[in-house]
Length: 307
Image 1 (cartoon, one colour):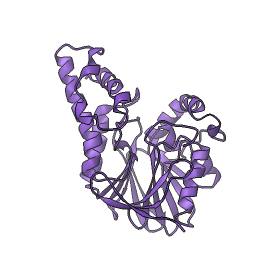
Image 2 (tube, helix red, strand yellow):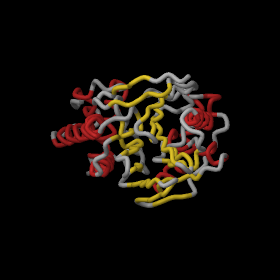
Image 3 (cartoon, helix red, strand yellow):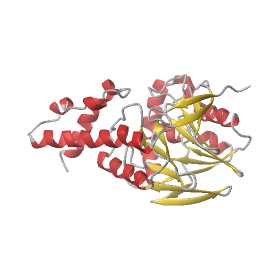
Image 4 (cartoon, helix red, strand yellow):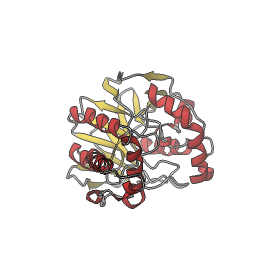
């Protein structure tokens, strides 16, 4: 018999945990009667988590499951499917890749082999193709044999700015606003449930990482597009399902503060070396802060010195 316990998110919303950690450290959290989050590690990719160090979305319809993000590897996709099978007998019919990070799309080879439709923004597919070799090289070092079977497979259905789907009587919208954590980050919106699957536009409980391919200004604009819909539930790309207020505090407010501090640093004649000392202490409670904060400052400095 499956054990169930109540889970209280940091922002006060209550969800039902319907299964404990699986082999890939996925925790299943019920958000609505037909919407779930599969929450993975908030740390680094590892052989044990199959590069599923992220949060994935599950939408159960009468005509099959829509999966938001494919998993970080072929084996990672297998673990996601095992978690879904504990929820429903419905097969995965549609997989939406919300971006170009490995855990958003490198499980595609598994889902394609099982006949699922693969959907992504045009910008995400472009990013995936540009970084596929680098991502697989990185994963070979981080997860080793757990990468076996993983091959780059790209979505055959793409869109520019938005796409409306009807699956099993459910209206599902996908929106791309601007480059964010990666150049093609989109989010998925369920208007009837008021649920936003934010992908890498939202990090909660842990500090976000600003990458070489990130765009901090576009990231804020992408968050604002989610905020404009006033979701009741936000399923982030990293962390547990949460409220819009918590998502904003951990992601948007962090980026706004960092950009404000870096702007002032540049106006005072500061250089990239000194950028690591701008004050980010208001966010030191977030996991991975010590690892990422200084790197984030330098990356945002390189963006803003040319704005």
